Image (tube, rainbow over all chains, first blue to last red; front, side, top):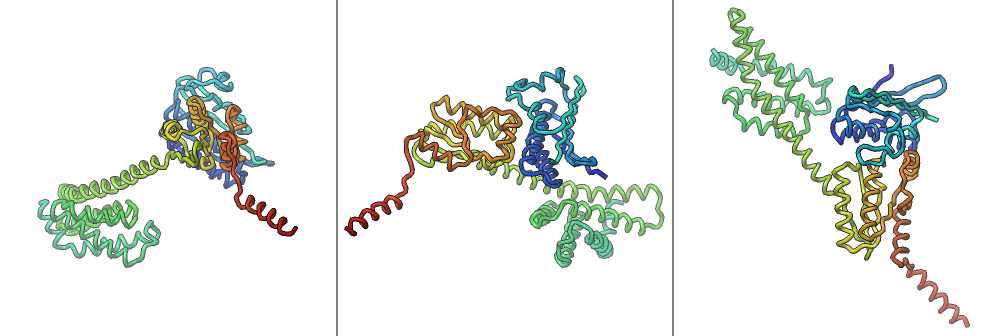
Length: 133
Length: 289
C-alpha cells in the first residue's frame, strides 16, 4: 500500500535525480518550501556520500503515517567500505575528502529522525525521517 | 533451403504484410502510439514493412534502413515501435513458413527459425544502434550546451562583475566556476565580484564548499566577493546544516548586493530625474518671487 521509489546512485548526475525525486515526493505530501529545501539538501548529502565513498548505492523514499502525523522516510543504502567510527563522522568538521565535514551531522539537523548503521566492509544504511508539522 | 524460404516469403509478401499490418494495428490502441493519427500510423507501418522486405531481399541494404530509422527518430516515436514491429514480423513469418510446409519436423523447424533470425537480427541491431546513436548524440550536444551556459562572468560596470549561477553545480562545473571567476576578475580588473545563486536549487555542503573556496580565491587575488540571491529557504538550510558563511559578505538579492558593491567602490546611483525635479522646484520658487 505504501509506494516506495528508489534511485540508483552510480554517477554524479544521479544525485540530481535523487534530489528531484525527493523534492517531488516531499511536495506531493504537502511539505512547505523550506522543508522541501531541507529534504532536497539532505538527499543531496546522502546521495553524494554514496557517490563519493561507496560508488554504488541506492536512495529510496516512502511516505510514512502514524496516528497523529505523516512524513517522508528516506533510506540511503550502499555496499561500500562502511564507516569505522560512526561517532567521529557525526561530529562537525570531520572529513576524509577535504570537504566541509558538515554532511552527516547536517543531515541529522535537517531531518527529524536519523539513524545510521554501518559495518566495515559491508556498507552503510542511513534512515532519516522528516515529519510534516 | 535458405534461399527457397526467402523466395517463398518474398513471393507471398502480400499475405505476410497483411497479417503483420493486422497485428501491428492491434497493438496501437492501448500502446505508446495512441496519440498518432491512424493514417500516419498505417503509412509508416507500410513503409516499415517495405523496409523489412527490401532489407531481406538485399541481404541488409543499410541505406533504406538508415533513412527509415531517421524518419522514426524525427517523428519521436519510441524504440519499442521498431522492436515490437520486428518481433511481430518474426512471429508472423515463422507462422507463415511453418504453415506452408508439408511436414514439420524439428529439422525444418530449426531451419525456419534460423533463417528468419538471420534476416531480422541485423535489422534489429542496426535500428537499435541508429536509435541509441541519436540519443548519445543528443546527450553530448546537451552536455556541450550545458557547459556553455555554465559560468558566465558579466562585467556590469567598471570594477564590478556579476556571475549568475543557474542550475545544479557538480564537480566539473565547480572547477569551471572557479577558473572563470579568477580569470575574469583579473581580466576585467574587478574589485567586487557578485556571485548570484538565485538559480541554484540546492545548496548542500559540497556546493557551499566550492563557493567558499571560490570566494576565498577571489579574496586572495585582492577582490571582494559578495554572495547574493540567497533565498529564505536556502538561508535556513544553510544554517541547519551548519555551514559557516560568516566570513563572506552576503545579500538576499542581486540588487542589494550591487548597492553594497557600489558602496565598496565608493560610488552611488543618482536619480537624474529627481535631481532635475529639485532644480525645477527651485526655478519655480524663484519665479514665484
